[in-house]
Length: 191
Image (cartoon, rainbow, N blue to C red; front, top):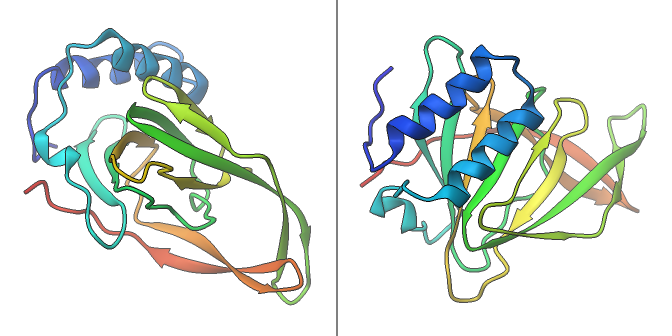
């Protein structure tokens, strides 16, 4: 599928991702390749990637691969913007911070009640910087993300094994419990 946006280094970025798919795929290996592409330079994301939305972080598709079915999305986080505690609806995810800093907090599911309530153990937040990535597996990929800057936007790239349009958001249900709610995700335009 053709990308709705073109930019310096796009072809090299896509080729490096597809090379991982062709030569022994693993999310961890894909993460290392994405980190290297960010650190090596020569890739200039479109200017629109620097434009946060005023109400929430922006999700803009860079590429949807017909052959391997993965989706590459740029997320723009305005100052102080964050995600709620969420999962990836049974998908793994590779993330790499392209610009700025993000605070990422992982959560491990520790208890499930018969009425649907869930309890998590929350880990200490990790501050990531440009060129640093991570990957989450499909079963344990619960986390929150937050731009800690009061002034600057952050940009992260995310790769999912297929188009990512639904996830679970977890909202407080009292006494340390949360409930999962389905959340439909949309893509933002590049303009």
